[in-house]
Image (cartoon, rainbow, N blue to C red):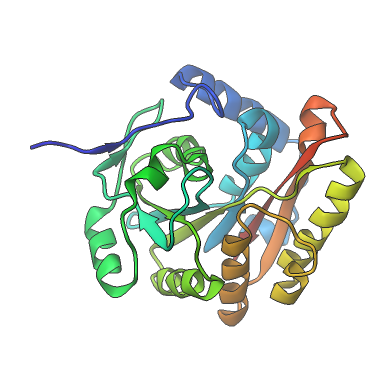
Amino acid sequence: MHTSIRKTSVAGLFYPSSCKDVLSDIKKFNTKFKHINIPNDLQNVTPRAILVPHAGYKYSGFTANMAYRFVKIKKDTRIIVIGPSHKHYFKGISASYYDKFETPCGDINIDSAYLFALAKELNICFEPKAHKNEHSTEVQMPFIKHYFNNTKVIELIYGDVEVKELSKIIYVLLQNPDNILIISSDLSHFHTLEVAKSHDNVCLKGIALLDVKQLENRCEACGLIGIKALVEVAKKERLSSKLLDYKTSADANGNKKSVVGYLSAIFY
């Protein structure tokens, strides 16, 4: 029987193409993580969703890894990764209808049975070109493989879509206690450091306060639809949010003239 695989497209670009080097990066992130003082009230929370960046690991790997450290899984957990389409324009929300997702450290099983049931209930299409070169979701998979080795995943990529349409899917997904959501987004792009921080602070405040109106006030993010949808549902479901880390590309390369912002947060 033929097994279909969602192949990697940015291994060797955004993250290492060898498992050894992926593990080496994660080890470095965790060495830094050990020196962070995590408040007691946060140590025991169980996130229902996390918000993570999706740049190269050099730039945003530590920030993303920090959120993954809070995720707790049980036997029946499945992880749904939701990110924006960067390269291919389409309308709607597309799922990876493959059997497995390739990573440098081994394939991850896609929960096809759950996905088919979900697609019957909700408006989810299959737009193959959206998945072919999409990094927003792909860069999350080596983290998932490392931390949650036998957990099944679903990859959802959204194109031109209304916030309310994605909110509906997020709401349905959060009704199932076995689901953990990973929403992928970077923040502002290519401003000076000072301007980037002023835009990004609007996003940080909106996420911390679960305030969609705040997010509409100069928050720039390539995954803004995903952020708004998650914040909307989190407020409705009475979840709490906690910002974990904020960095810019200037922290990694020293260039303060053209900066990209990154943050991670948990929703519990």
